[in-house]
Length: 114
Image (cartoon, rainbow, N blue to C red; front, side, top):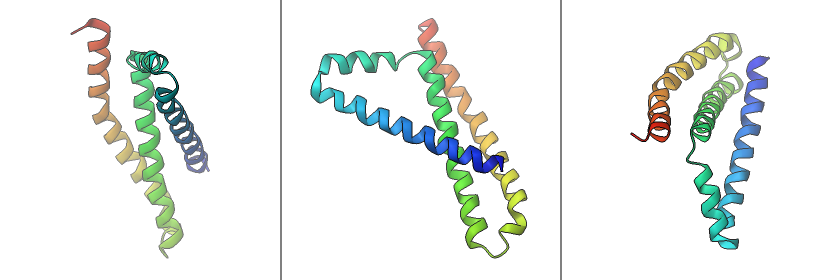
């Protein structure tokens, strides 16, 4: 049940990001100065953490989507759905742990000017 909820929530978050991305990219045609201001706000540590969250959402959504496909189209899928869920979570945690170093490095460079 919770994986279903998380899959829907991550899907909505990804859609929201794509919508905002299209809007801010379209802003370059309307007002290049405002576009530059918006892009400048993306170079903050808070946005860096939000980007890490975006990576987390996309990665979970993709891995869980593969699990859903396996459950739906593999005859033994429903029998192994719990094991597949924990495999997805394990792979997700390992990949997210590996992705934290670049995020922290970027935040340190922005904060401390290194």
